[in-house]
Length: 270
Image (cartoon, rainbow, N blue to C red; front, top):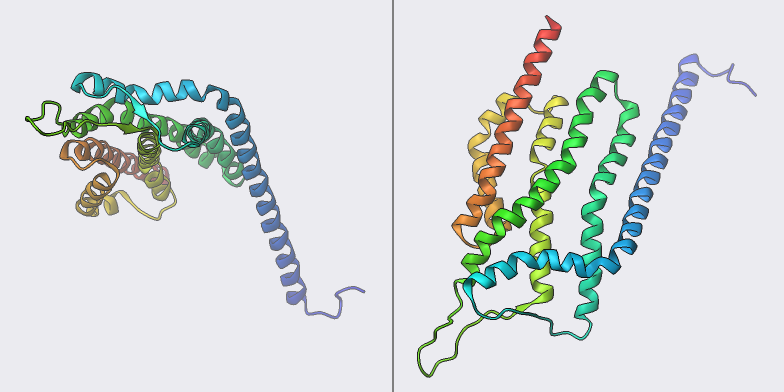
């Protein structure tokens, strides 16, 4: 039976609805396939890195070992639970897999988004997806080489190594799981925080925000960035500034980049 007896506009609407449903179904299927690839790649990295968990532990212990060597006191890390050592190896393998999987995940997101973009949009978006993993790594390296030496020096200063007579000395006995959770959380948090310019540039390119909006919002952004720095870093002013200042520079770089894009767009329309 044909649709000859239906009004022409109704028949066309049904056809468009069917095509729309098929399109959304296809997108969801492809998105599920991309997510599955990311999960499988993460699982593969986890299996590969689990035997190397000891090497990852040596690398992550380096900042604390250096700080302990400079301040003196206990030169060891302990674990108190029977299964804590095994669970720590699982956490280390999962952490390493998450870090190494980030570029692959960004590539899969790019492959999902790219077919729906025009050639000029692809030219703009591709550097963003390339810079995203780079900024993530920069955030982790910033924690490892800049923040932790400052923060650990401050935190270890509370040790009372030369106690008065008839009192007990106060010395850090670092617990393995607590230290690694603290350091890995910082690395992941900073890596994600360093994605700020990527998010702002994408929003600017989509027309949701403009460079002038970011300039007008600057005073509130400064307050927000310092609040985030206070939450993510140890409770000392130096560590908070160590995170806040790079985020402010990244915010200003996003303003500058969006402003350049707007000027280029205006020239193209003239």
